[in-house]
Length: 377
Image (cartoon, rainbow, N blue to C red):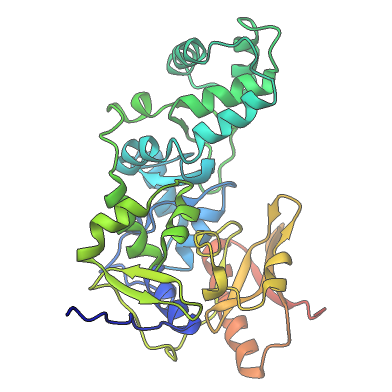
């Protein structure tokens, strides 16, 4: 008779340390081990809703990081910003832009398009024809969303202008062209196709199994629902079933089945976790259905948002512990730390040191750096 082995349990703290290790947040990765492009690929992209978050994300994870390095990768078209997982903007390597967008199409852009269609803004619009016209427009020259709206409105004057531009972004794999996204530069969001930007065709699409393995490498151990939350895709259980012989199986404290790569790091639950300052929308906080591995107190999560805007956050002992703000006025740069509760004297000292390091990386030209604590708990 076959015996059934009960999977070992990973506590929330053990999951925290494992995830931080995958995220390069237990220690900054030496440049001899991980390049900037390698980090972008390993993390399966960086949240890029705004210009600065990708730079803040890498600064928290790599040693000796200069923001110009990531900026140069964007200038050289080795990294680009585009809509992928969950229909949100991420900075990806060129290879991932071409392979991941078709995989995540159903989990984000298609769903967003259906939402706009349900609202009636695209009534009477032939979406396939719209995609053809929009492709011709953006490949002729990069266009802003406003320019796309105005051009497409000439073909469908009865349609909602905003819906027309969103439909173009959802149906076509569009990248934001530089100088948008470059460090210390400004520029409108202008779009062209990935084919035109990289000079290569889209695809082949990454497989569901490849996506699962890369997700576990960056965010595991994790459940099927965790992976679906991260990707926006549904019905991913079959991919896990096919991979099961190659994976380890655990359970969390609540009995949820978790999967992991056999050779992935799972440090001891009491491993030291230094403070880290993360950008708004960092995927560490958005890529699991159960976020208790990073957010011990659910009330804290609510304090990291105002409306649709996420605040930059920081970790203490590996867990969400507060928000922060960087202000730059003339020659002075100030980082204000807002803990959710009183840190110990040792934690306060560690936070101040990490804040100074963050200032040195993100505002190197400032004549003065100031770290302040807002203790309105």
